[in-house]
Length: 309
Image 1: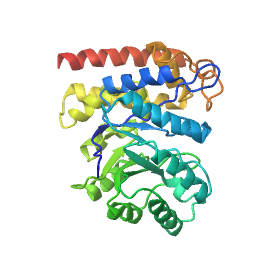
Image 2: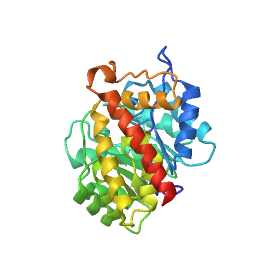
Image 3: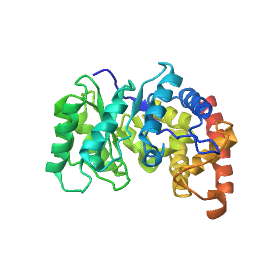
Image 4: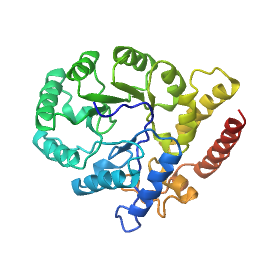
């Protein structure tokens, strides 16, 4: 196993130009921003990257450029298989494997696209592992689209027993499930990484090896600090957990475009263009701009409190 996940794993955005092309300059700035914000691993070509709306050529380009812009400072993992048919997925996965990413992440609902059960999952898993380089670390991702396909404990153990998997991006959003999975993988290189802001601190204390939720695109440094200090029961930690949980509720207000609007404020992006969200969140969602103002002020206040701690 060449990679060990332990810390913040941002689900990367894809910046676009107003002409609907991948903005390479914006991607370079974004990569630096994640690194400076305390990311331990970058997750490219995922749902936050709008992978379902990217061509295979664009998904491969995204992974290659992220590796280039990361400059070896931290590992890069990527997914990007979105097709229904297994043979088409194999084409996608082989192309992504050739980019040189540090781990290739398998989407659980693509291993069982018709939700047929464990036998279908096992069949696809075996075919994919056979087709990919044996020394390439793999990951799992319970991507919510087109449907959320959670792993059973037996399926998780099946993947663990292969010795090829480094991480599960857990999207159960359920603390007992995260804790049970963390206990199953304790003492192994296999990391369970929670993606839900509401249970972020509790999940870290229960064994989640970091955080992989969408609000790593807003204040990654706060999640990185929380993980590093997760065992401290202080007023600052309790207040931070509440702030992050409540901030994360803004996800329903036009994410990922909402996050791109945030990066317009920061100067990371030159455009908030999104292929997934074709409307202006600040117009559709009442007081969304005011909410971003509150998140901005709250983020700065917690940075000040952390600096003084």
